[in-house]
Length: 158
Image 1 (cartoon, one colour):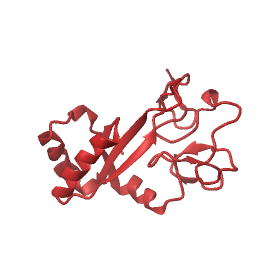
Image 2 (cartoon, one colour; image 1 turned 45 degrees about the horizontal axis):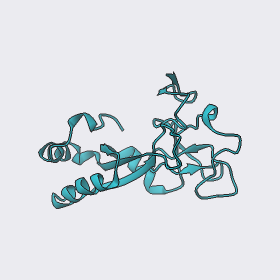
Image 3 (cartoon, helix red, strand yellow; image 1 turned 60 degrees about the vertical axis):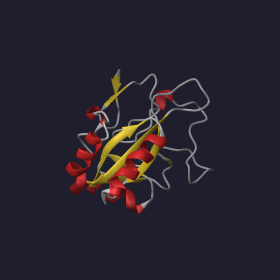
Image 4 (cartoon, rainbow, N blue to C red; image 1 turned 45 degrees about the vertical axis):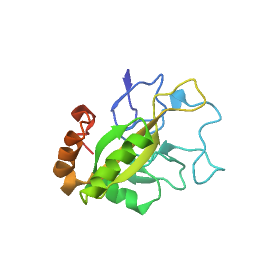
């Protein structure tokens, strides 16, 4: 286990292709061909959006503090005013929580990102995050508990 060269967060430099904390690419794990930007397919990616996980190039890169964002203006708001309530491995699990939050009039968004734990299979595993506004976090935590979802999965930080 090492640390991210950009932000210092723990990072397995042998298997992680990017840092989940700041979005910086782990060049030691990326092939010579690199990773292609999700928007500008003619450009090589330099990192990944910490909100949605899109690969971004220098052209569409937006920095927020020491974290990488894609060009979506909503993502700045999601980063500054929203929190990750829960993470899942599968979208259907997040959809269930999303529906329950909606029934309680709690706005939420679901983001599916590439898991930085590289695998040998052609399909990489994903991390599915459910984000909610900071002001509704405590109320939403109660719903998570009522649903019997593990409290350990709830994020304590942005």
